[in-house]
Structures are given as structure tokens and as C-alpha cells.
Length: 258
Image (cartoon, rainbow, N blue to C red; front, side):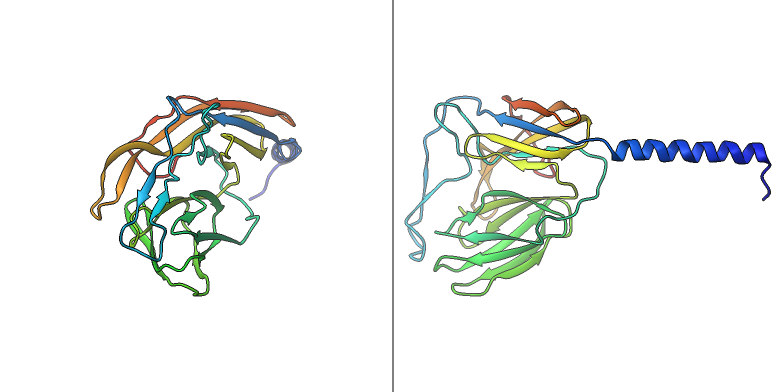
């Protein structure tokens, strides 16, 4: 197809304009998001799960599903996810660990880049049967024996994974697999920081596994009502944006926070 000089010049200008916009966007200096998550209500006392039967585990297991600092009401282990349209991320680590320590799965909550290999490690003398769920379906199962080498399981589907031990009903962990790196988990001070966020307006979600007892599952494991709050945040070039979550409310879907 032949193009006359006028049409060719118009198309060339359009291409140059698009290229210029792309370069301008690439030169944008990213910002960051810092925030705090507060527990709504009185700080609850720490509870223990009684273990009368498995002598390879402690007889009392401290609960870790709800960790609140008494004076600041800082809420730990809250998953923070920024909604982003782009789906590209380069993993900063190719492997991550989920350990059984003192018959608890640790860390309780973590996020990992899409494609990370999860290493299952037994650091106690008990037998475990690890069972990973996503959206109500089994992703994998694995027997984790004492003194066994780590087991590798690749995480190739984005979203929220619930990890149980079928031998010990109190053992649970959560893993959020993300295609981007605008994700964080609150620390013991209830704080989080997300760096390298492109300038723009975003929805940001806070998700916690919950503390209100819901019902036992089919195996007799106590379930909690998941909690969530969504806010908007504006990120500016080379600046830190602040966002505080103080009103997490029940969500009836235990799935991807975004």
C-alpha cells in the first residue's frame, strides 16, 4: 500500500508523539507508600491452643492469628496490596521458606513474587501433612517428616493461598502470590512500606485473616471471619504517601485481596 507524503508525515508525527509519551512515563520517578493498621476495639489477651495428644509438639501452642500491640493497637500480619494494572515483576528472590517450628507454620503471613519456589522445612521433631488451598481447591499436599530435606513447591498461580497442616488443626499460614511488587505485610508495630510505586491514583487493600470465630471446618478446625478495608491513595513522584487503616470490616470471600 502506497502512502502519500502528507499521510506519511502524519503517521510519523503520531509515532513520535507516542514514543515521547512513553519516554516521559519511563522517566517518572517512583514514590512510596507508608502506612499503619490499627485494631478496632480492645486489645485481646493472648490465647493458647491445648495439645493433649501429639507428644512431639508442645502441650500449649500460642495463637498467632491475632497479634495486637496493647497500647498502640498496632495490628501485625495484615496483608497490604496495591491495585495495579501492570502484571510484570522480576522476582527479587527465587526461593522462600515456610517452616514448621514448635508445631507452628512460620511465617504466619508472607507475600511472594509469582514464580517463587516455596521450600517446606521441618525444624521440629513432629510429622506434618502440609495442605495448600486456593479458592477452595487443593493446590498441593506434602508429608513433612522429621529430619527430612526441604520440599520444593513452585507457586505459579497468583492469589491467596491458605496453608494448613492436616495433622495439627491449629497450624496455619497464608501466602499471597503477586505478579507485581506493590505488596507488604505489617510488622509488629502495625506499619508497612511499599517502595517503587509509579506515580498515580490507586486503590489499596488491607486484609487480615480475622479474629471473630465463624465455625469449625469439616475437619474440626476453627475458622475466623476474614477482615478487609479498601482506601484510595495518590502517589507522587519521589514522595512518600501516608495511608492509615482503622476500620477493617468482615469480608465473606477468602480469596485474593484485590
